[in-house]
Length: 201
Image (cartoon, rainbow, N blue to C red; front, side, top):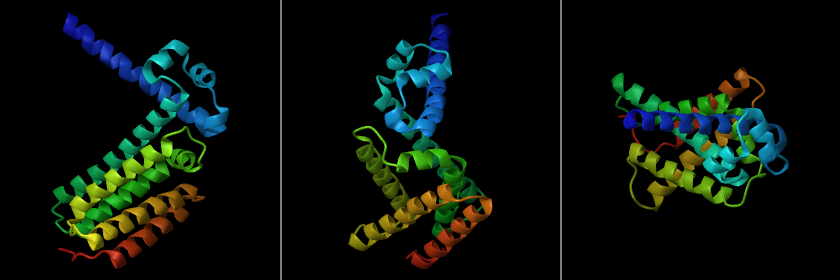
């Protein structure tokens, strides 16, 4: 009985966090971080202020948690695309990398409101550090997939390619429609194929 109760409590905790994060996405998107208030977020949820502080601590932590969820969803989207492409028999590191890049850019289109929010600069103290740390982690995961050399050239190659995708994601988020977004994705793939230092196999 206690075990079942604990599982229910965990489920409720996750659900409550998601409700707050969904509301924060709306409020921060509409007002920006500085102008938004905890009361604005709570009002959208029907929950209590105390519950928000229990789960996140304050407005800044809520913003950071929203970014962490967004980044995790982007990574998961890209990783799943790589895994699915590999499962279909593809072995080329270049094609696997491109599959992940396309998925990442597709996620940027699906979550373009968040891409814009996190790029505007209206954020709590510590956000830029957290964002750069996440980008560095992503760069080294990409390095493992690309199997580049562990020297200056290899590191710069991975950094350049992942920075290209990151900037392309911002272009995707700013696109007026799907046609414009597809043009950015196509251009990104062309540049990756030109810059990639590894063979197709």
